[in-house]
Length: 284
Image: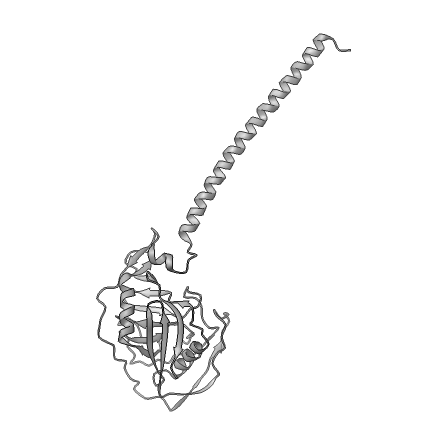
């Protein structure tokens, strides 16, 4: 049997162990509390950064708000005179052979490429884009670019352009609105390409409808409308039609509200006023 002195010594040691245990527990709780606070602050800060630098909207947010690290550049001195498209020095034959070559990149939106073969090089086709800023009316000219006209009509009839947005507006140096990428980021195409239909006499200006490309013979679905100055463009973009004056006035208003640029004066980015294509109707 332990003596009273031994029992007191044991009780003292037990109490000391309990005190050490409680102290360690309190210390751990303080560490956990500090770490939790740091994690929460980091998550909140990261969330704010993520929301500030990533746009998950459909364009409406960018139309009303501009992030602090971006600038809105507005178009000024937009010419009002329509540009006269230079004719070819030598007219095309009555029919030309068109080839649409499948590419390595997948299509941004499902479609069937036009059939290869001959296409007429005479006549015009009317196309109306129903957009969020009103109807934009095009006249496609086969004598300028029969393969390009055939391609655009094919995509329009397949509703390829429906429910897409014009992803790029340039207000400085050149004045163009670029559309035709279903992905809305300027990287997408139909999954195939076709050759340029250009000639040395080409010049660009208000009312011109032309194909965008990423180099020689890389035409796909992206196109641009020159609503103002296009004098700085080289003759390497296929012109395949024109845009009527009333449509250009609607684009002027978009250009005057500005483009969202990465830095002031850049003048190249997403339109502050969205131009969303709802439909593309080909006239019979």
